[in-house]
Structures are given as C-alpha cells and as structure tokens.
Image (cartoon, rainbow, N blue to C red; front, side, top):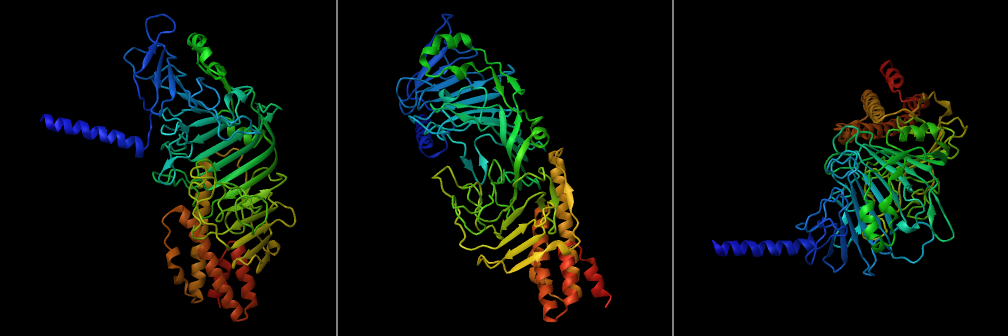
Length: 574
C-alpha cells in the first residue's frame, strides 16, 4: 500500500511539472513560501510577499481585510496582485503587471476586474498597443474575467480553444473598457478609449448575439500622455442575425455597422465603484510607481441600457458603413471586420484594396459605404433579396463561395501580425452603385471570371423593384433576428418558384441538388440565393439560344424584381 501511495505522489508531481510546461496555465505558480506582513498593526496580515515561478517579485494586497496567516495567496473577490515583471524593484511601473478584483456590491464575489499592463517602452507616439489598461465588468455574474497567460505573465485577449472559444470573457452579458497606454500616461483613469465594448446575450445561453463598440479617440499631448474627451467618435454594432452561435461556434456575427463623426457625449454616464481601501493604500503607496488606479471610485462610460439609443438617435455621424459576412466564416469576437471603399480588385492587408484592414476577410464579405451618412444607418431589402445599406453610394461583394479563404477568428495577434488564411489570387466580384442618388443601388456589375473586367453590367432602373426601407433605430436583437428569418424564408420561397420555372421548361435543375435541402435559416438564405442565380443563368442561356427576346425581358424582371410568378404563368399558359 505504501509503494502505491508513493507512486501516486510521484506521478502527481510529474503531472504538475508537465502541466506547467505544456498545458494551459490559468493561475500563478509560486517558488517560495509566502511572507505575511501586517502593515496596520491589527495582528492580521495585510499583504503577502512572494516570488513567482520565474523569480519575479509579487505582492498580494488584502483590500477587504480578511487575510489570515495561513493564506498562501490573496482571494479573488476583493484583493489585488502586483507583479514586478521587469525586476526593477518597482511595482505598477513600466514593464509591470497588476490585477485588481473588486466586489462592488459586497456579496462576496468579484463584479469587476482591472488589469494594468504597462509596457517598458521609453516613448510611443500615439497608442501603445503592448500596454493595456482594461476593466471587465461581469454583468452576468459568471466569475469570468481577463485571461492572463501565467507562463508569460502577459494579458492574452485572443487566446482561445477551438474556433472561437476565447478565454478572455467576451461571452454572454459582459462589458469591458480599455485603453492601450500605460496607466501613468492616461490623464483621467475613469475614462477609456474603448468606452465601453458591450456584449449582449439576448437568449440567456451564455453566448453573445450582439455587440456594441464605442470609441473615444482622445488626444495626445507633446509628452505622449493621452486625454479622453468624454465623446464617442466611432461606433460599431454587430449582430448574429441567425443566432447560430453554439459551443464550438461561440461567435458568428453576420453583419456589422460602423458610424464615424462628431458622435455623442457620454459625460453624464457616471458609474460609482465601491473601491474603498484607502487605509492600506496609504501604507503601501511608496511601493507603487503609479498608485492612481487604486483610487478610481467612478468610471464614465455609456451604459448598456442606453448605448443603442445613443448610437442611432443621439449620434451626429458623417459616414456609415456596413459589412455582411456572406461566406459565414467570421468567428471574430468583436465584429465582422469592415471592407473599405478602396480598390475593388487589389487584395492583401494594407494594400489599398477593400480588404486593406488587416483584420478584414481577404475574400467572402460584402461591404457597402454611405460616405455622407445620408441614409442614417437605415437598411433595405434590395433587388437580390439581401440586406443593403440605405444611402450607400457604392458597394462590393468579393465572393468566396466555399469559404476557401477561411477567416475564422482572423489569425492576427498571436503568432505574428499576419493573416493565417491564404489570399486568393483571383475572385469573383459583384459591384453596386447608386447612380441617381436616391439611396438604392441601381447599377450592378459582375466580374465572375476574376479578370478585373466586368463582363455584365445591369441597369436596374427599368425594373419595378420594391424597396422596403428598414428603420433600425429602435431595434432590439429580436427585431434583427426576425428580420433575417423573414428574409431567409422569402429567399427560399423565391428559389422554389425558380425551380418551378425550370421544371416547366424542362431545364434540369437537379444539377444543383446539393443546394435544394437547406438545414438552417442561413442555408435557406445562402442556398436560395445561389439556386436562383444558377437557374437564372440557365434560363438566360436557354432563351438566348432560342432568340426569345421577350422571354429574356420577362426573366430579367422575374429575377431582379424577386417575383417569378409572371414568368411561370407565361410559360404555363402557352
């Protein structure tokens, strides 16, 4: 029995050693015994001094005065961990990492967590992307916050399991605030750059169906310090229209809107914090390079209850963009990244094409751009049965029909700032233009062979296209979801009508049998579009071969007006 026990202990030791090397490390590891210090003379410890696995000095601060001499570390409800990451003998300074847990409602569980991660860069012009001053506010009370890679002692916001199960808490009903600057370069620590980033769990499944990102661009002084303005200058709204997120597909936004301009003020949105630990702070202030974040007792940010109203009804915007993930391969946590109104045929990050933004999908998405915000963010269902941006002057769908250029979560930030997917050398393109300025696309151009020349250009003005303008200013997630459900059903019903036309003319539509059994709303939407596209082209070739010009005109009307019935009736009544 003793031999077995010894073997078990040895094996457990080997497992522990292996886990520190190869498995995820979700907690700090220590290399010596804790040294307890009573700084206020009340016979219980107020801080623990200890060394981490790599020899870095760390201090646990007991902010809620419940530490005992038997504790080997602080608690995770209302304590703070300071790490002298660069070994210069100073805490909360250049190169250091600090994590603060705050129990705002005093229920024994942390409601907020602050990470202060300062780079050791001497000077930076503008944002310091390797620094993070970042709050997470746990509205759903699931206890999940930031993810620190404890092997590196680095905040890792992009680490994930599978396709999009991020360890950082972007899931469900949560919210974060962030500024990419060392804390000591931020003038007012109660205001942030991403202020806030809000996630909405509309169906209470622990996953995110919608997000709102509000950005205060701030300003930098000659010393490189940043002041935030208390004004949102850029706003992003993203929606998982078909609500197909699930374990192993945690994020699946389908479209995003972007607004830019004067924006709106949020200075009235003050949120108090019960963060009173002045007693211990007064005794340890000499240890801290920057102690101001320890004294933050309020945060100023737009609350989740008013965020959408402020974006759609209070913001003064100069432009609005939309992007739609047509190949359904985006598993980013924040949005479908935007295409930009640049060259339609250039491809590659920072290459002045529509996918200029390195975070954008190289191919597969549809971007539309209202450069004067004349449409005020409204949408409409267009000639193709798809959601379009009302007021957009131009748009482009760079087609990746099979999601061969699979974007996933984007591929950036971990393992180098580069796209993981291979960029296609050629791709089909559909371009859209509003020629008469009425807010609706009326010129459609197709380059389906990827030679950068549009082989088909169609003026839609001659068709009686019904445009249903959709005012989303008061939309909740349910309205977005209902809109897509209705749109997908209509797309599929129109596809079934096109099949009836093909049958009536003995056109063999069963070449497309793989598209005829949709298993989800998204497949009704996508397969329905492509079925109509292929059948339309087969019918067009059939009528052109037989020189049936009247039928060609009727076919064009059926396709672009989304009504196959007149064509079907004309064939049946022959």
